[in-house]
Amino acid sequence: MQGGRTASRGRSGRGLLDMMFQPAAALESGAAEGWPATGLAVSGAAFLLFFLQTGLDRVHAGTATPLLAAGLAVLGLVGGTLGIAALATATWGLSRILGGGRSWSWALRACGMAYAPALVYGIFGLGARLLLGWNTSVSFGLSGFLWSILPLMAVHENLVGGSKPAAVVLTLLSGGMVLAAWGWLAAG
Image (cartoon, rainbow, N blue to C red; front, side, top):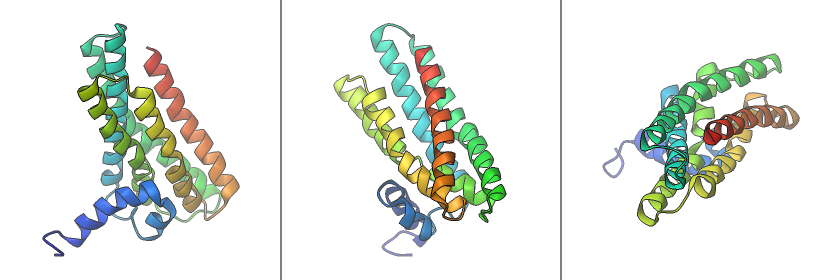
């Protein structure tokens, strides 16, 4: 125990901020070690908030009902956990073909943790939405997702053993798929 907190709890909280500001250093210090569900909880919560903001923006514009907004939030949770797990599995499989040596569980946790910026932006965006009435899905939700590209790139580079070109391709493919899914769901 350190200051009333266990070392692992302190490391997890710091891991989120490290993944946001120093993703390569966070990965080197073990931010992606541990239970894969922890990383997927980060991405699940991030996309729940992102899609909830999208739904609330659509309710405010008169193009959706509150029930649809709730449904979008559920889709965000499912996509942020199962969808990111599927993308992590696919990129892990490709990384193995390219000579990467990371475990599948490492890939699940690291890919989920890469969405830490989207989670932080989602929290602030929901606050701005509820307190100020702003439409926030683009200004906060999309910005948080775009900020997550750098940590995702660091994860992919680590997965493929340091090959930047391979990491760029993996990041473009997985990031593009997530962005396309959001665009399709947001358009309704």
